View 1 (spheres, rainbow, N blue to C red):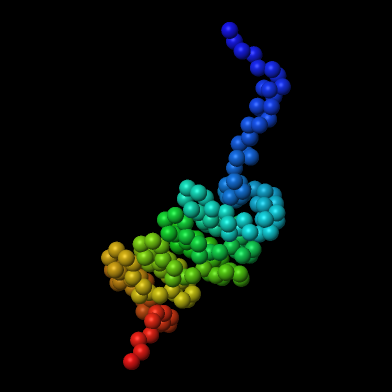
View 2 (view 1 turned 180 degrees about the horizontal axis):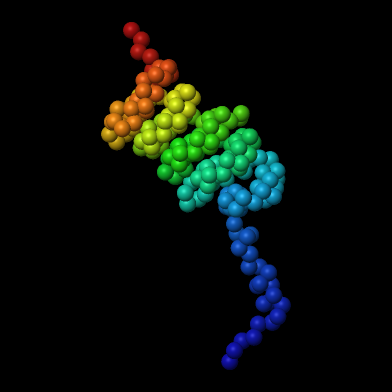
Length: 204
């Protein structure tokens, strides 16, 4: 014999079940709005959070921040929007990539310039990924002279080595025999003043 639920109980069960949108976090909704280029939603969430969501939103699966999303999507307008409102360009995603590293790998000079010239927080030009690859190493590997020149001008260290082979951007440029202009640009760049390594001082 089938049991028939009273209509009142059935109705309450339907109301109690959360809608999919209610289960989505603010981070998810904000990053989705950026991917969808939903300007109204983006502005609304930035305003309601007092701007905090720009730096707190993270993709739980990839570790991407809002800037990672706009840079990976190649969206200069939204990247500038976030930077002008204090987005931190030096956060890493789950693979250790910063927005600058992504922009360089994609050969997007416009995005690289935006990240390096932000009025709020500028990108650290020498911040490497998890394997030690810097933006300059990636630019040399891509044979992108314009980006190499831009990064050097911003203070990129051509002698910082990656973890695997121990090669630096200068080493990779020496190997690029078909692109001698890369090494020429590096050799002509001013020497980078490295900050002293902090640590205990040995007293005698």
